[in-house]
Image (cartoon, rainbow, N blue to C red; front, top):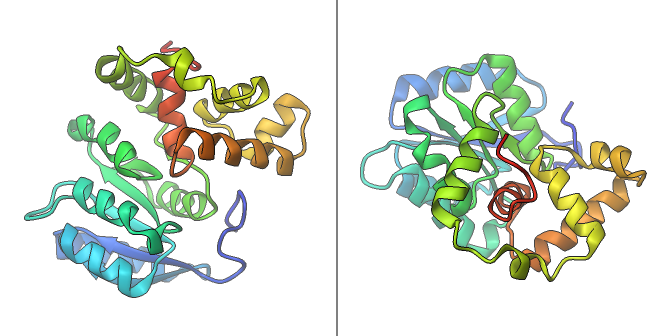
Length: 230
């Protein structure tokens, strides 16, 4: 069911729901629990509780709201990403169009991607499976424009040539394709490589650039100009 690298090894994808509205959490639980390959392992009403439950349950995916009282979704994402034992936990942020300014911060904090809150059930389920499989998920309606604009505005002074100097030419090519939202299989097809070889190049690029996951590689690709703003 889930694509990509199959990070859950055939077992159900364990999901933690984080939203300050109980009705929203209940609706999400009802949607997810009818899926054979997804299991809801807990619910949190704020960011602090999200971090505690992530430690307790070690979910595969945290479905994270941004605007919550006390500790918001950005801080909670940063907290989860900072805990060594939670490195395999993927955070999928839910946002509304008027909270776009938070998306770049969320990716920088360690989120694996984001979806708009008005996404349909099929899109949400697909997003959870994609993120659980180790891919980045970036809502197509706003992603390229949004990340490009924020990256240019906030990181324009960054020396891209120096930052990319640690990569081989092939790794730069792969990084550019990751920035365009391609999966390992699609990258392999584009560059005439096997998916496993493409995955190796992605992993090496992540290590060299200090990126937690593919979503942060997307940000780097925009920041350094490997992906244009058109």
